[in-house]
Length: 280
Image 1 (spheres, one colour):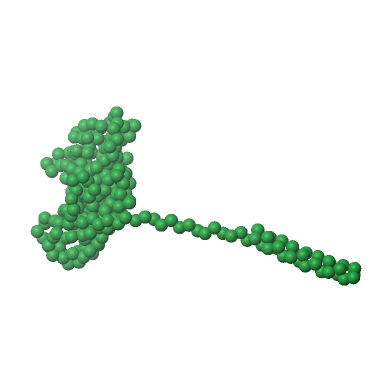
Image 2 (image 1 turned 135 degrees about the horizontal axis):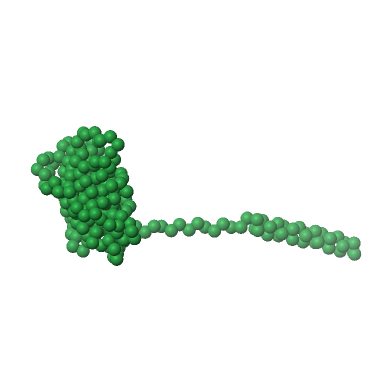
């Protein structure tokens, strides 16, 4: 009888040892392979709204076949940086204006302290023939829909060969040397006023004496030059404010230009020299 009890006790001990070993193995597996937390994906909120645009032009000439209208909503807050396109729409057009266009934009991307502009262009075979020349802020207090955007015809480029070793108008930063016949002094912080022309985006930008500015290059040939009203940041400076007011007021008077001996001279419609520049 005692022998049988010993065998029962021994068998029971073996079973308990096996169960304890299995439990340890299960715990070890749990430690080695912890459960991974589920990924959390946060959806970006979008608030799409329509912006109704009416594109017109006053030129009586009809557009050629194949004309393509492009309308874009741009953030132009940074005068010394390229604009940011928030929405764009392209369409083939024929016949007379107006051309209705609807731009759908994300209202969550519109910032109260930013400046915006609706720009329109017409191209034929990827060649620019018309462009808007006036800044149109669709979110201004007095803006109404449909927002009317007017196109102006772009003067055709003339096939002329630039003088040898002469810089081109576009590309360099042109430092302002004289304005209305008077030599200008550096502006705020000892920085010189300058202007830069970009014929790819038909824009001008620069530093006017206190603030940075950004405007539209409305027309440019080998000798003619037209610049729209410029917009600038609104910083107040102890120096350079008078220079800035005079410089920005002179931009819409630009009518023609010439480059001789690395000096850019700009004249008005009466052939009076408005300003001279040198490469900065």
